[in-house]
Length: 400
Length: 240
Image 1 (cartoon, each protein chain N blue to C red):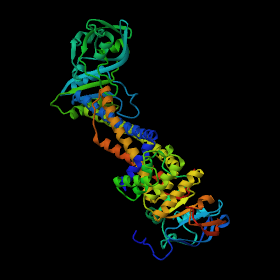
Image 2 (image 1 turned 135 degrees about the horizontal axis):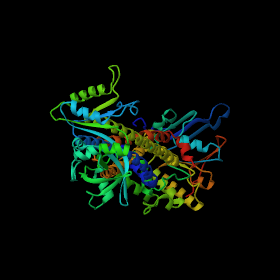
Image 3 (image 1 turned 180 degrees about the vertical axis):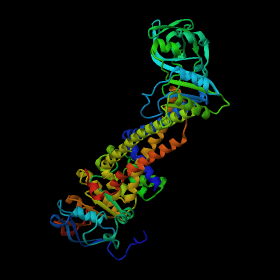
Image 4 (image 1 turned 180 degrees about the horizontal axis):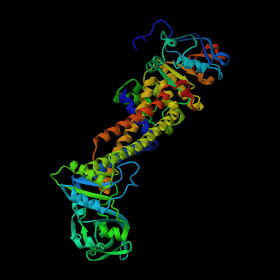
C-alpha cells in the first residue's frame, strides 16, 4: 500500500512539476534558513570562545558600573590612580593596563579611516597578548610627557598606507598629528564584526589631555601571574576598589571585576541566545512553507475532484485516498527538506569562510530540520488529504 | 472478502421496492419510488428517461456508489444497503467496472497508466499491470496508442481507454453512465458495438443509462423512468 501510494504520488507530482517545485522551494528555504542560521550561530560562538581564549585565561577586566541593569553609565569612571593602586597594592599581578578609548578618524594624505583610538600603556600589549611586528613600543618618556606617538593595527595600516612604509610617518587623529612608531602584529578578523586590528594605540596621557580632555578611564585590564589564583586576585581588587570608591558595607559594588572565563560565558550565552532566536525566526518561515504545502494540496485536491471521484468509484478505500495525498505532501516536504539541507551545507560553509568564523558541522540540527520538514508535510497535508478522502464519489464525479 | 459468494439460482442484481429520498422534511425530494429491477447474469440493460427521472440515481445505487433510503438492493445476494462505505468500495473494486459520460481519465497521464489504475488498488505487481493494460487496450482497438495522453486522443478513443480501464479487472458488472453522451453518432455506435461485443463474448453484465433511443437499441432490455418510477419495460430484439 505504501509503495503504490508513493507511485501514485510521484505520478501526481510529475504531472504538476512546476507547481510542485515551487512548493518544495518554500520548505527548502525554511529548512536552509534554519540550518544556516544555527551553523553560523554555532560558528560565532566557537569564534568568540577561541578569541577569548587567545586573550589568555588569567586576565581580569575592571570596569565602572554594575554588570547589568541601571547605574552602569552613571557610575564614576576610574582614574589612572586606580590602576596604579592595583599595581602597587595587589600581589600576584603581572601587568595592569588602564584603558580609555575614543572613536576618531585617522588621516594620512588623501586616505582616511575611522577607527577606535585606545589610550593606554605598554602593559596593554602584554595583557592582551599582542606583539609589535615593526617599530617599537612606547618609551617611558613618551608615556610621561603624553607625546603624540602611536602604534597602529594592521587594518589601519593597510587602509592608510597600502604598500607604503608606515613607521616614521605622521598621521592625523582628530586635530593632532601623531608619529607612527610601531605596527601591531595582525591578529585577524574577529567574529561579530569586531576587528582586533582596526585600532590605534596612543599613550594614555596623550588621549586624556589632547583628545578626551578628562582623566577618565573606562577599563582596567589586570593580568594575573600564572601561578596565582584569579579568583583571589579578583576578590582583592574588589576590596581595594570598594575602599578607594568609599563604598559602605551596606551598599553594592558600583564597578565590575570580570575574568575572561566569565566574559566568555556571558558572550557565549549571548550568541547562543541570538542563535536560538534566529533559528526560531527561520522556523517560522518553515511554518510558512508548510502553509504553502497545505495551500497547494488544497488546490490539488479541488482540481482533482473528478480524479478522486474516479478513484473512489473504481474501489479506492477512503484511507487509500487519504494516504495518497498525505504521501504526496510528505514527499514534497521531505524533498524540500533534502534540498534545503544541501543548500544549507553549501551556503553555511561559504558564509563561514566569508565571515571568517569556523564552520561547525552539526548532524543534530540537520536531522532535526529534516524530521521537522517531514512533520510539516504530515501536519499540513492531513487536512487536504482528509478532504479528498471524505468526498462523495457521486458528487465528485459530476464536479465541473 | 470471502463473504461475497455468488448466490446461484437468484438474480445477479436485484432492486426490491427501492426508494431513494434526498434531503429531509419539507425540502426532501424523492428521486426513486418503489422501484423493482432484476438483472440476470449476462444481461444488457438500458435505463432511459428524461433528466430528473431518477435514472442516474438508480445507476448510482446499482453501482454501489449510493444506498437506498428504503427497500433492498441485493448484489449477488448481498444486501448492499447494509454495507459500510469501505465495504462498498471493496465490492466495486472486485466486481464492478465503470464507464462515465465524461470519460474521467486522469489528465496528463498516458492511456496505459490510466488503464492500469484499478489494478494498483488491487495490489497487482507492476509487470503484470503493464501486460494486462496492454491487453485491455488491444481489446478496445487502441493498440499502438498506449503512451498517448487523453488530450491527444479523440473523444471516442478516450471512451475506449475508459472502457479498457473498466475491463482490466474483469468485472462481472459494467456500469455505463451515458457512455455515448459526449460522442457523435458514428463514434457512439462504435462504442455501443464494443459494449455489445464485451457483453456477448465475455459474458459481462452491462447496465447502461442513456437518453438516446438509438443507443438503447443495443441493449437486451430497456426500462423507462419517469418521476422516479419505471413506467415501461420491454425486451429488445437487439440490433446485430
